[in-house]
Image 1 (cartoon, rainbow, N blue to C red):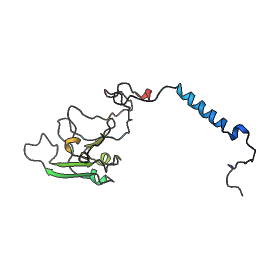
Image 2: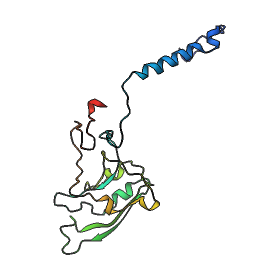
Image 3: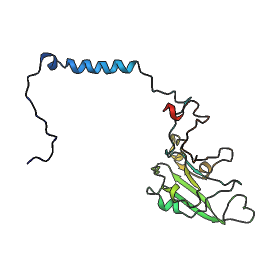
Image 4: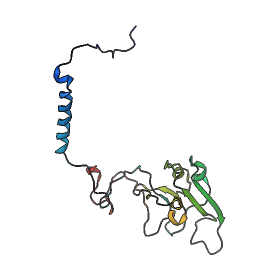
Length: 188
């Protein structure tokens, strides 16, 4: 009984002297190396030119603000519940009189922290947020940590600055940004 048609006939043919010295294999390997010498280099000059990471890349976390500069997060805790690595923790507080320009709703996150050593960048916190307050930027990587105390990101690092707003493009057309001067979809 034969299960597949992928069987191959094996022969015990005697190898030639060149085959025993691996000359055909060495020559074909050198041919591949020589062909690659004359191709265009794929190396980019990293600090000056940054590679386009793609629209589905999940990188640096950001807590969004609305158009008036108020924080969108209402400390509902759905992002912390959705996080499989339990990297997000928050403390909710009530908005006081006079803080209407800082927070959108009556309840806000007084403390919002992400442990970046635990975070697996799955994006479930972004999907769980009903107010669209949490985003994982597709254009910025998380910086390298030098000290142990740098891995806990608080609101001071997460809340977006009004002069550096993050906008996720709805269309699929990719455009170069000032940090990526020479990269477009055609170049990748």
